[in-house]
Length: 333
Length: 201
Image (cartoon, rainbow over all chains, first blue to last red):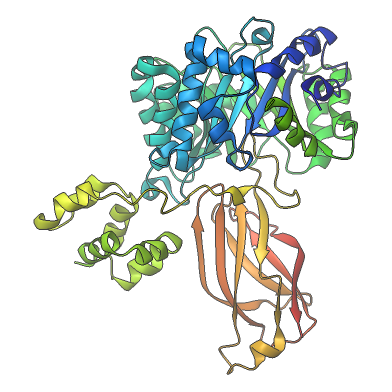
């Protein structure tokens, strides 16, 4: 199975045929070690962009794959020519080596190829690293995963990492209770190469957290976005680190059971955040697996925005299964 | 005093480190470590811990490093068996991967003296916060529980408890069905892991 086979399962209402074509070319730039694939689709009627995401896991050999970038051939060439791919290779080497914290605390990596990147001669993905963390209260568990986060930005940004290191430390040290950083990302696929954190935070700690990291406006934005869709006792909030932390945030939303997706999507349609045809197409995704070896799932919805900004709703659709493993063998050629 | 002793022994004894990694509270209890010192030790920060040590130990503590790969906080096991807890992204959906054992022999357990007819149940899961574990017979009787501990990491948590016969019973009955129930983040209702535990004959 190839990427275009996977992407072609997507409902036409969500993915424009031209996007499918450009995403197909990415196959030559996807490392081995794939656990799952996914796409990010905009739910507003006027938006048709789609991004591709690939999760890479140690169990599938992703550490070795990223550390060497031997295949596919074009990827091998890219890592010799492009500093961003070289950074990804450096990160792979750290992830492979037990002497680095990222080896111990990074559960898996996620590469996101922006739609814009797919059309370029040399596509470069943004890199999301899923961090593990000790159990327990932030005050007593320590933050060994912070070392991993700093290694990630150093590997991917080189000297430029110095400008965000203090801010990253502050964002970790401001965590309280059961709050934790779930991901650190470096948006290599974008011109500004910003650093993003995804934080799982108890609802009643949002104000104090963003107050402490210096951007109380972000807490306001979280409040605004979470009124759109009620969530549990924790929020998962994405934000970009800069000077200061960006007040535009993303809130990830996923119902507790798959039966609740229709109600959530209906609510987004009612608020004008989703096209009704697209919402219906999203609901059909789990049944569109092209064969019995694939399992399609609706991963989550992200609501992004800041104060006095338009709210953007995006849906993330995933695919896992045997076919993904076979894709690894294709990439390995 | 307790802190210095446990730190000294942890630096010298990899078996103790393994036990500590699995159940730090139990080990710190054995050494009589005070609550304040426990908080320091659990930072696992060499400098913070060294500052609490007698002078002659401080340099050794500052330089001490756990041998590479002695602990693997992230194991390949954190992925789900037979589905059930995907997706992992963006946040790991709270869930249980598996529990072991799935059955025990009532005859073997009942051959032990009353009070010792117990077995250990281990549950693996993810995104478990302030979690409670119970074993409940089909009629609602709850098994006695001891030595309950939670360790591991956010993405690969391990719950471990020793269970004895349910309610007022002093022996196990072969063929009884039990639900493994988990209350996560103090938020009812508790989950029931399916299929459950079956007491064999």
